[in-house]
Amino acid sequence: MAEIVATTPLPQSGDILMAELTPDGQLLKENGELTVEAENKEEEEEEEEDPNKIPDNACETLYLQNLNEKVRIPVLRETLGNLFKPYRPLQPVIAHHNIRMRGQAFVSFSDVETANEARRDVNEFPLYGKPIQISFAKSLSDSVMKKTKDEKAFEEHIKHRSEDKKLKRKSNPLRQKAQAKLKAEPSTAGAPSGPSAKKARLQMPDEYLPPNSVLFIQNLPDGTTSEELREVFEVHPGLVEIRTIPAKKDIAFVEFADETTATVAKDALHNFKIDGETKMKVTYARK
Image (cartoon, rainbow, N blue to C red; front, side):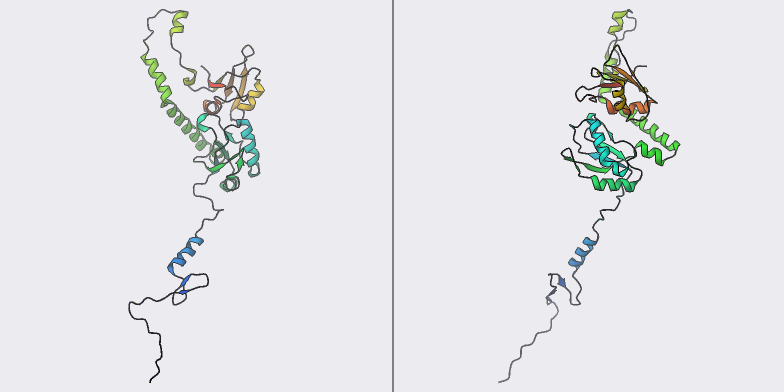
């Protein structure tokens, strides 16, 4: 009887070839190349973002969020200043106490590279029990604009910002409500003059007085000195003079170089607790 010899049949059209496995389990083609799936995986690994790469939206100013709101603003400014000191910020940290900006701050640097380094190193740093969330600001601070732009461009920047604030102030619903109430009151034309008539007339609330380079400070804690006020207000540029009233120690006047710098200070320090408890009221002084 003839011996039967088993042979491996040649693959026919439509047959499936078994792929060969590498030691780490990756599939190989007949010529030894990796399969498409493995190649794609390698490409994805190569495309991983470089942690040192500067993002496209980078700028010289950083925006800090998730700050502990229970910490007093002067203390928070000092702590953040010490934290960012190795990166040589252009000016003191800007932090506000008002409701809209509570728990947030801004810090500016001389160049984008330094700002990115500070963002990378300090992001998620646990400050007063909360990790700081750091991103790039949407617009540059005044200090950066003044350093990087010419005088004309800087003045245009200040003018545009001032006009934008005026528009926002006019569209404020509380302001519109107060103005509507004033218009609805009967006219006092032809009414008798005198003290009683003056009391009857409505006065524009302090909060809606027109911009002024002089600020009116009210509700100061007993014993507040001009030096203490200076420490609070001098972090904002343009401070000219602080005038306290000996006969009335709970009020003061603070003068700035112009309406723009006064407005920045007013918005930042209204309701600021200078002693940690009492909220001081900051409005424009009456002209």
